[in-house]
Image (cartoon, rainbow, N blue to C red):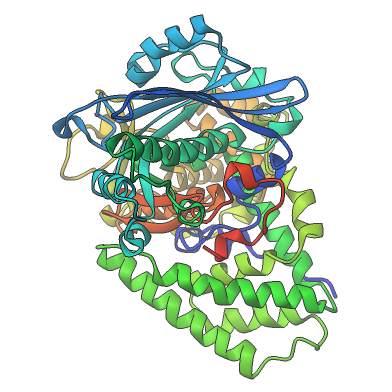
Length: 551
């Protein structure tokens, strides 16, 4: 049986993309699998009795070493902020290429805590900072210093000791450019170095809290239980700065979505599922209920989504336990068809993630295809014609062409770059100033404008001639030729319309990162947890691939 890939005009709508969840394809999970046989070490741990100082952790294999350099800093409570405008943090980190020398450490000690204001070198690969969840951190220290383990209810509710507020890479602030690293096989997948940094930061938080507790009361202090450590992750506050990424990297976005869609297609085409595959699928699904019910959020919007997801997943569980027979031909195809008829969008995509769990043989070859050498596709084929371009747009953007941008509601918002922090922001075009500084992120509007110009242009006119008169449309001409080859490269929605929910764009990217527990604080920023339930570095040699559902 041959199953078709799902229609991009359905899958690439923001409501669907904002319903994606982590899966075996997510970067933090594939990172752990790829680095499980590397040698992990804590090379330096020079903190004072209050936990301030320097620590270094490393992963080594053969001659390759990556070192996380950590600086724990003393700051006052009024200096601690998760906002991007903050200038001080409880800790600052960089991932160094190789083993840092004493001179490197001194240089980094002066620059890394400054973050954006500092300057790094080609030896540094990623840069980050994080703040304590002060209430949780202090509670854990107090408990351990008295010889007790901390309150599990509190730890479960929060899920982490620290939360990061940014992770930078690819040439920012003097960091190594991607081109220096792109041929390294061990980091060939997207965001491998960023995942490594966050994972090692997680271990630092455990070591630091144990260290402070021991100094507080050396006679009675105990270490944080390893199982408790395992069930804590690293928090993250994520805002609109992440949203433009998925617009600005169309071929990369395509490769992420395409890998997921190919995996789903191939799983639906499996005629007979083995008992082990069925077991992993069902156990992952049942275990995941704990994850859904442990989300804590004050967002009414997110509470409704969680309740709807939980209700739909329980309905689906009831179906497969009482009505469904896995011994039929193509069982996962039948499951998927049932979901499309009976479940909400978020439940459909949630179960799709579960369907990927048992199938290593399908997933692993796809992971290596999730990167993109984007420069290859940047050149516009100027020998093509207006007729070619118009046909591509009409075939690939049918719903976009139906939008009437004369209506205020369809062009209500605009994207701009904050002057102070050079970060993307979002504003109401009709209530706020600055729309003349709009960033080219309104792809739907610009595609519609391009199509209107093409309709009154000569069919045989070549694109080079067309662009002489319409150079302001060059960016969408390029995108149209990209989508011809990459069907999942474009959000098939209006990113400046009245109904847009920006966190759908954030959730899409975060799902591929491997985030858990989405907690929107508005429609423009949210908190998440990463690596919760993940094996500790000392346990990487042999761990359960379904760890994410067993935390």
